Each structure stands twice: as C-alpha cells, then as structure tokens.
Length: 152
Image (cartoon, rainbow, N blue to C red):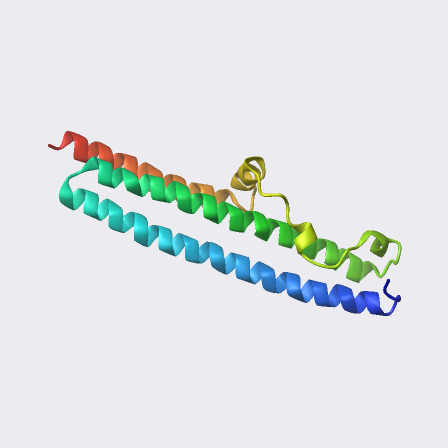
C-alpha cells in the first residue's frame, strides 16, 4: 500500500500516462480515417473504371471494417477520458476518502469490447461523428453502385 505522500505522485503519473494514451488514441482514429478514405476511394474508383458494381460494393465492406476498428479506438478513448476526469477530481480534491477505491492504471478503466459497448460508442457525443463519417462513405458507395448498375 502507498503512503499518503506517494498517492498524489501516483495520481500525477497516472494522469500523465492517461493523457498520453488519449493523444495516441485520437491519432489512431485519424489514421484510420485517412486509410479508409484512401482504400475506399481507390476501390470505388477502380469499380467505376471497370464498370463493375461488385467491385464498388467492396468499398462499402471496407468502410464497415474501418468503422469497426475506429469504434474500438474511440471506445478506448472514451474510457481514457473518463479515467482522466476521475483522476482530475482526485487530484483537485485532495480527499483521501476518494482515493480509497482508486487503482493505478488505465487498463482497469477500459471497458470490455462487446458489440453493445461499440454501439454505445457509435451514438456517444464523442463518437457519433465516426458513425456519420463511415455512413457517408457507405451511402456514396451505394449511390455509385446504383449508378454503375443503371448506366449500362
């Protein structure tokens, strides 16, 4: 067990590590978006070029896969933000009673990754824009498929 003078240092260290994790997860979400635009756009362009709707449909499937990965990162980001908020409350209050149930580390704050958890992230105020982004890619792919189908 930690002494009372060590706990604030542990909280500060945990807070610094949590902020670093938040930055990292945010960067991963952006990288995933960049890769999804490149991959989906390339497949969609190839489907247009070849005038093949099944090829263009692969872009929608890719978007669903990228959306799933982005939701995982966003779920971890939301957990890290929640953990950081709890740490801020503990550091600011200085109340040793609040520190009794504190456990060091971000791993314990991460939720179990289930479909239900990911769907909650999909509609969360922090995560809904990820859902909207991939919905637009899927919608554009559907429009492209319809155009290819009916323009023959």
